[in-house]
Length: 576
Image 1 (cartoon, helix red, strand yellow):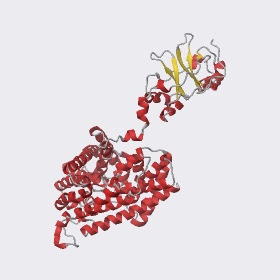
Image 2: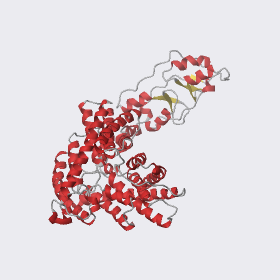
Image 3: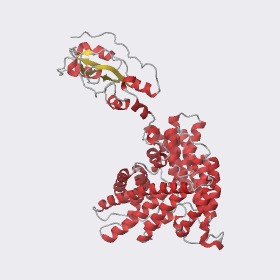
Image 4: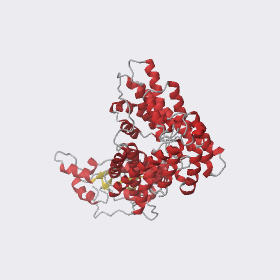
């Protein structure tokens, strides 16, 4: 908990410094705090270049951060979150400490020089690297290191977006990929700490200042479902176009990697010359779209332009996130959808801006499939509670269509293309469980008990058994199920019970044979009473062994010796 507070404080301070760096570099390269809102204006530092300076800004920035990333932290290239996900899943949460500084500098230079990317990926990676460094410094075990990395990610998101609730859910849903109570407590503590620091420096107000929206009719909920499907599809398209353009850049570039951002920056500058709204993160442009300041055709151009500009920035080796671009794309597409719907049904639909707002969450959900985070972060970014119900519908629809259209998300696809299976990395024991058979790890069978033995005689024997459960056999020695200590105790303590023999309380656990894999047997084992289940022969007529949790754990730990033996019963019960 102490480390979570320290990490949250560091992530909050890092977010403040990172935002200051972005603004400073943007002013240096463009002469404006946010050039995306300035239009085709000149840089006051070099007025004689006019608007053509945008051709050179990405090149100069690339000349600085290209060698920096290549030399000191290659993992700082790209949008950052996949690297953190992989570090948590497969590297025990270990992230090189230099990533904190290199990522901050590279991303600030990239965004300040016109890169059309977001700052959430960098701040996640910066905060995570900080958490990993503290974890290694204090010699934390791997399970705690992963939590500390998630603390850094949550703190960064919370501070940079003033979103103390969304930060933990982002970390739990995307980085840790579970909601364990222990890790959730630490992540929340880090997020709160980072938010307090962020609010002290940046103010306490919603990230986007938007007008009040409201629904006009109940059937409009159906339109938001359609919106979720449409914009969710756009989010999936953004995912694949991003990597298609990155592949094209890989194919076209033959020079040294350190020069790739500078040379590619000339192409990016051409895009910015045509569409200056693509310069940097572009939140002012997003707010204008939702406020209804763009016509339909311009909204569609801005949506397509952001897809291309972001993909190109990542493809040439830029450093920045894809969270903000997905919100931008969703805002443009959603507002365009709202314009069409509002023209068709002017008296029965909300303003187009509300559709743009919902579209932001739908695009993020379609690209990442992080439905919980999409709902919470949109609520916190806007402070608009009125959007919750339509937002939830649209996000669910977008997540569903994303699953239908694509196996991977915008984060996991980057790792899959490298040959990394994130699910297998998270659950490295799955392959072993699938390859190992029950027969290879099963223990010797405990001595069975006859089905005709009275419960009073069986009580002591079952309670003294190693696993609290024994196989039951009939007079013909065939398998008749199992009896547990609990079932015997319940029958004997119930004065109205008419159960007299073991056969009356025997249960039939799920069938597990010696040829089954451990992965198949785990479901039966987890649903059984007691700590073990019988292993049957192929026809299920007799017990040939016993499977316990300790046998499975021994297999997972790589044990190749003889499986542990069960404790022998003190005495056998004579058959009836």
